[in-house]
Length: 261
Image (cartoon, rainbow, N blue to C red; front, side, top):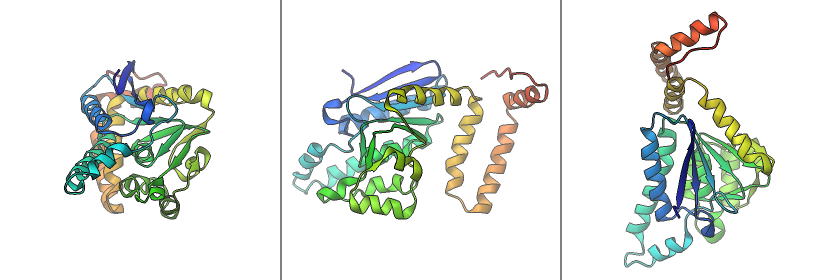
């Protein structure tokens, strides 16, 4: 049984965390599988959208605490092994916005600690309305410092800090209010709602979405004037694409575009 399952439905790739016995924890094996999957997707021109979900009762409960405890027992207190783990986790989290395809988290059950970080790292997220989210490591004396990076880039500062220091869980409705997820939906429609969003995005011009996703994350790190200068150049790049010219002609002629890609 693969720890991470992939099946493709047309232009949509479905990745499912498949370690339900430990609530799809981000173990060494899971991180390696995710890294491999993202490397493969980065050059897969047939895939336009990725859906990331979890098997069993939960989306992802964060790091595997048994593995963390075992690493901690090393002669150096686990410093080298733990640093390596957190470096590899950071690599996986950063691979998601770096992918050319938009990634949608399909979340149910719980998404805690690094599992909440995984949701925050995705480009979009839809959750069942009974899902709970938390960065609750502080409850066991381990502040969620690395999950904080993605969380604080999704959620307003004071709300993020409250979640990190209280260890309290929030509902899917509250997560949507704060911007951690896009929508909270009934659990029995979660897969359909996520698939509908994926198909909507996959139907757009692939080259435009790839260019746009890259520019979205690049401009976030720039001052305002530099962001406009950068995205203006990106618009020129986008306009130069033959399929973009076809899209504009089709709009002016009131017909569907005939895109090559």
